[in-house]
Image (tube, rainbow, N blue to C red; front, side):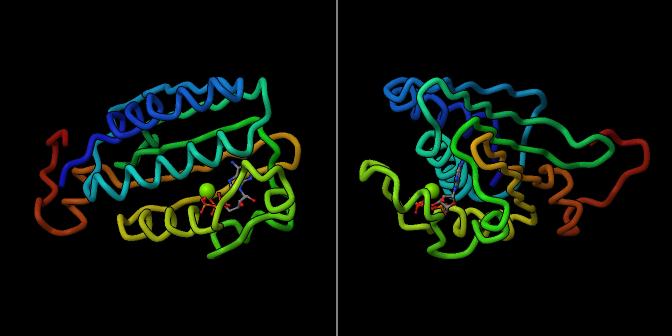
Length: 172
Ligand code: ATP
Ligand code: MG
């Protein structure tokens, strides 16, 4: 299935705009490049929703969330970043955020309105890996968090699967 990641993100950003406003958090989206990928729209939607949900949940009033899609220079890949200015993650916890059921002490002890199972990022990682992509977490405690996803473009995914041969000089 051909999925326009920009449409998926745009819809998700619209969906979370209300809750972001309630928490006095700014949520914006900058589509810097076309972002057509191959895969499951439903699963990619779930990934984007999980990331924006986290960014909103772990932000403080006055925080900013910036979602961006861009091209990876020289590669047939799309980059999606969800950057927040929230509570951040301790350096020693960053490598564990994709583990099933992992929740930082701070998240567990935060007010009861911030609930979660600790499965969101683990599901994101499985979905992105099934799409031939990678997901990384950059974070600094009390500064903020950026989740970065790299996915092959639609044409790259087709080429990798052997469906479309590379045609020299053909802009794909
Ligand atoms: P669920 O997604 O199942 O509702 P969750 O949000 O706690 O629960 P994950 O999305 O897997 O679980 O995230 C795991 C943990 O990583 C969180 O509990 C939190 O400690 C930390 N975390 C994830 N995203 C952020 C973020 N944007 N800022 C700060 N901490 C984060
Ligand atoms: Mg989550």
